[in-house]
Length: 64
Image (cartoon, rainbow, N blue to C red; front, side, top):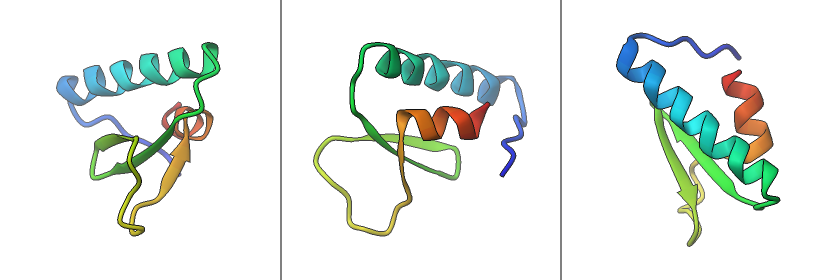
């Protein structure tokens, strides 16, 4: 799967989320994320079960 950046606003969003993901990985934070329609969510209370869930490593690889 390839991620395409549509405009400068999305480019800043992707740059920001990548920085957060790298920080979680560097600091050993075991975080889970969802990503749908260019909306990123850090999971802290669970989900309704319909979202795809990514670790910080998985999502960073997907976005790079």
